[in-house]
Image (cartoon, rainbow, N blue to C red; front, side, top):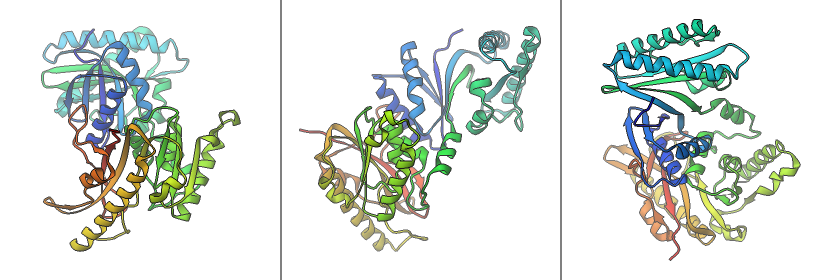
Length: 417
């Protein structure tokens, strides 16, 4: 059973952010080029066996990718006898392999996607019948978790709550034009861990916190290497710092707000206590109460990346007058430029700065935000305009924060002449 493509990836709600992270992932595993097909919220990739192994090892540290798996075969949708035969063989082999490791009842989830509700329902029923027949033939108890109807698939929350990764597997099918693809899900993001981490944080501020998933994405996009030092010059409550520690890097946080300074320290201390003393997690982080424009007073380490969601301007409940907005963004542009200029002296060559940029959108034709080209030029950094793979344009819109401020993700790179 073979397919032109070897791996499928399902994007999160921000499709372009997922593609940007995926591009970064492929860079990390040293791909020079890749064959792919994009369809709806799914990307099909052609990878070698070695590349596939490295690909799945990277997924756990991404933040916006929802699901990924191995594609086992593709067939013309009209050749019903052939694809049903291949499907039965795939399910038979997978059930026997997985059930040999399970002591309890086997769970099998079904995910079918196509442009037609009728086709989705019919294929879902075909898979369901095949599983039930194999359950009887192999004398194995198999449960198919119930969903509202065949047009739905398990959400990552449901997948993790059902312990699918431990209790069974998910069979996934896509109908793209005249082709039907079948595979087995190998990885699903775990929102339960994020919820537990978020609710368990000692200090949370509504207006000063980066979401855990976004923080993980930002750290991942920085391409920082294990053991290097990550700097967040506007660390808030420390979410980006925590995600850096979880990705095996050292972190330095800076914030001039006493409330945020204390919150970061308390949250990082709480995280530190989860580890045995021999891991010396306490030695891998430090937080300073300091104006980030004067960070050279406290930062002497060589920095592997700067990752931050900075001060985005005053908290507003409605769009300001345009002249007021322009003045706010000019002041923020000066602030960001000063901080990045100060950071540059400590950045290693080719290190990245991954940063959120605010914006006020008045219409499709008028958006007011700091000028990223000016920030790059005045900081002596290179501005990335497009991802290496999948042509994702930067700065990338990533949605709104707690009020009417829009946000974009900008990436700069240090290039030492």
